[in-house]
Image (cartoon, rainbow, N blue to C red; front, side, top):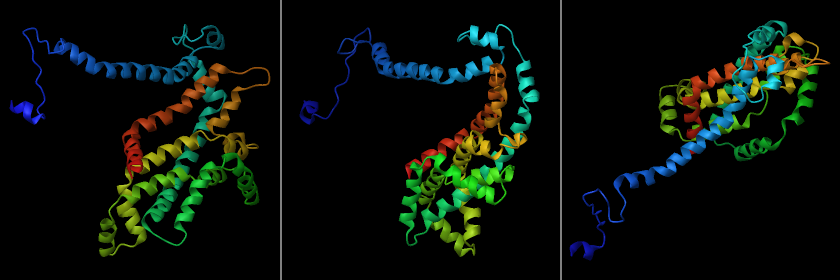
Length: 306
């Protein structure tokens, strides 16, 4: 009587001796129906993951085959005969070891320069208000819609005037001198949510702008720094147009993306050697992401949350 009067008490399931509820379903059936959407979603995601990773598995398989096996084996992943000589040919004959070293040097320095530059820019835009700051931020966002190819001509012209063509230093300056607006916005969103009391406490202790930034704010932004580092690493590692222009007359300065052309001849293409070189070039990116994936996710979620 009381339950009917209040109307707010949930009706308890009436179970019989077989564990059946009022609608005739057993508890096991109800659990199955509750979990069914999750199982369907899991199966679909596994299928998408297999489709996503299959090209990488095929490239790994192709790197251990000869050209005949590649074209006659179809989508078969397991090689009939493992041809490890493909890696030796890519490393020695195609000078891919040299290209890999050039890429590591260019990428590491570019990541360091871009990270510091974008961190300071995002920090100033997020924590300081000055005349025209919103306009400046709007111009930065507008540059996201400018294609990269439109800036390569002035960059090359300036590099020619400064005699920086055909050098790793010029390539590093050209790659690190881009806008990298997405990295600035990630730092901007993260620094905005940090309490101002931390800066005020640092100022009371006698810290200036530089010390406050490098001793207090930048260490707090470590997840964002990892995110920007991974994104910049991938962008620089896969860069093609600028490294191609900067190494026209210096093949020994090529990066891995440009070095892939070494497998393309006038009459034939070494597809298996190119696949081996592709595996070599992608391994550093995969290793870096595995190491920094936790910070990468935290940085993205923190920037989006703000």
